[in-house]
Length: 298
Image 1 (cartoon, rainbow, N blue to C red):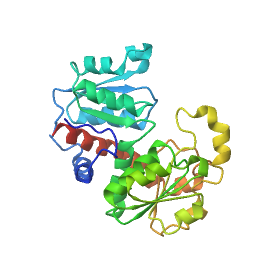
Image 2: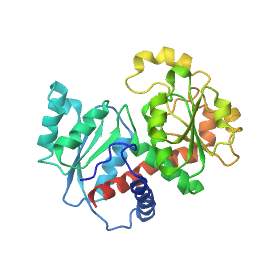
Image 3: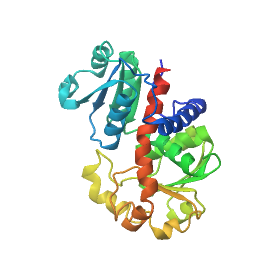
Image 4: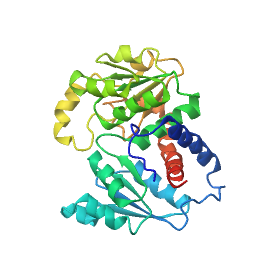
């Protein structure tokens, strides 16, 4: 049985299959009779709030012929302390697949182990695989193969998004530069374990020089709200703006996985100048996640 729990656990062939199929899903949207989820019901279990992830998965499941139920922590006995393995064993007898957005990576992995149904990591504190697959699909849709290119991430280098980028760089053979304050850089052990072509620096200008893709995310991730004041001080100089963009390649893309806080991780002018790319990136969550669902059940 297949799951999508992390980029780390995926092989390059599976990633490439999903990316290729995402293009098919996008091209054929509204004109396809392909419904691999017909007769199935999928559960979405979210303990973290969401706009893009929830809407794209709900629409995608329906477009692939399935039914979907959305469950937050207050809807389940998980919210009252039921072990994840017990919830998994119950749902595994009733639904056909699960999409989980939560804090601990171990919760997603335990659910997959105990439920016996395909399970998707829709975000944990450790990884955000659906987002990074979408980002790579978007880059390749607009600029061609990502292999050999330079991706530069600006901001919190220790959160889930750059962690997934680290594993993707290894699998798909592109260069990844992470510019982050020292206290917010990925661990050297993680970099060494990945085996990818990864550079970590505190210097945004150095990281942006000649880049093919500039990427950022919020400074204060969900669960870090009590650290907001300190984080905003730490990241004050880690912003995508015109000055930084001018150091990248002339045709470099600028991406943000949203929500965006203008004037913090990206300034308003930069976001609006690259809004077409950023909102295409957001739309592509739908097509990529449909490809993920199709890959899981075939």
